[in-house]
Image 1 (cartoon, rainbow, N blue to C red):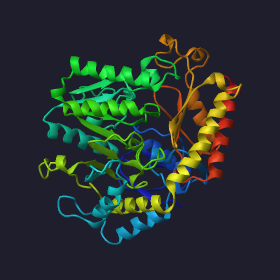
Image 2: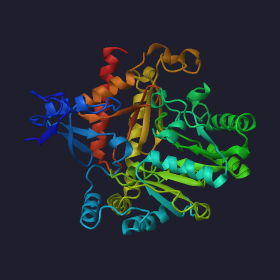
Image 3: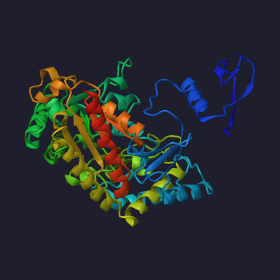
Image 4: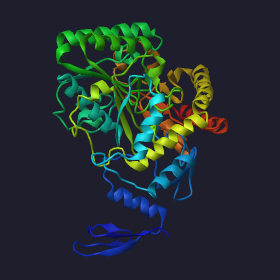
Amino acid sequence: MLPKLFHSSGRLLGRSVIRPGERYVSSISSPASLNDFGKQHVTKGLARISDGVMARGQGSYVEYLDGKKMLDFTCGIGVTNLGHSHPKVSKAAAEQCMNITHVQCSIAFHEPYLRLIEKLLPEMPHRSLDSFFFWNSGSEAVEAAIKMARVLTGRQNIITMQGAYHGRTFGAMAVTKSKTVYSDGVAPLMPGVFSIPYPFWHQLRLPPSTPSSVLTDECLYQLHLLLSQQTSPKDTAAIIIEPVLGEGGYVPAPKEFLEGLRAVCDQHGILLIVDEVQSGFGRTGEMFFIEESGVRPDILLMAKGLANGFPLSGVVSRKELTDKLAPGSMGGTYAGNAVSCAAACAVVDAFREENILQNVKARSQELFAFLNDLKQDQTLAQYILDVRGRGLMAAMEFASSEAPGAEFDPATPKALTVKKGIASRVAKKCIEKGMLLLTTSVYEVIRFIPPLNISQEDMKKGCEIFEESLREVVREGI
């Protein structure tokens, strides 16, 4: 029996009418009625890809109140990287709950906070990253980075990337350029934000096969043009980049582009903010994707997989920079919560003890081999435009005649026969067949974000569900 709910809103709840000023007890006795209650009372501004109430999760699977069990290829959008309810992480959090749950960061240190720094220092992609601040979410980490960049440089302007996603709070929303839905009706946004193309062939109207050197040259040219025409280097505080474009389409940045950004930042005293909120913590096969390039961030952002489901984000920089911040200028009531930090300590331990990165690389080879085989399949090839990503952050893009700019883009001629919506239709089929899967970007893109410790058997099962769903959609007509 589900718990009884108290209400005084005057709305219909089950079969009971609750009138203003009255206090009634309503018993919601079934998963369906609880789901309906959520639809009635949870703000419409939140969206969901599945119907029902999720009740529990274990490893690569989640279960709903009605008993439905689903293979999870979303990980809560790249959060439960070690799977749901990882025993070491859950145990660490539970034990911390029995000691102290909240130590406000402006009052005192707490041990899990400091132990987490101790564990993270060897994992940093550059040894200069030695000063840490923990907050709750990726968006808050972005807000902190923007504030730090402006304070530390005495400059106001921020350069972001076309297609970037950094969050939905005010500053983070201003540097987010992946979809207009995140800022519709909110203008004026935070001023002082400029954008350049990301080295993604779509944004430059070039074929998917375009060499990364060509994409890099064009985007760095646009950056130099921007610094000459729109925001002077002496007014520019930072460049912020996702080294693997997330919501914008799962596109890894070429090494030479990241190196080019670093060179521009060094030349002009601009800070380089690397947002690894989604790509960090093993998602790409390295602890942080930026390691692949060897490029040094001035500020590194992490969240999502950091605490495997407990709310925690990190802002990491150089002590020589953060020592310039005024005490009290950073902070937050729940920043660096003790339970979340204890969970994150267990996450780092699990990565080391359970060979997580090796599993990512093995399962990644299987996933990409599968996706590329589909791309070569004679019955499917005309519909598949691109397979890309890194590690277990993978994407398949479908051709579409209704993609943004398709009517002007001679680089994608096979897009002329496919209508908009194929990605969402395939994802919906997968959900119907028992696997959670997400789309992403303004293009027709499916993204694969399975747990990093997923078994070979579950990877195979997920691939089979996806292929079956895709073939059904093709047979139904697209």
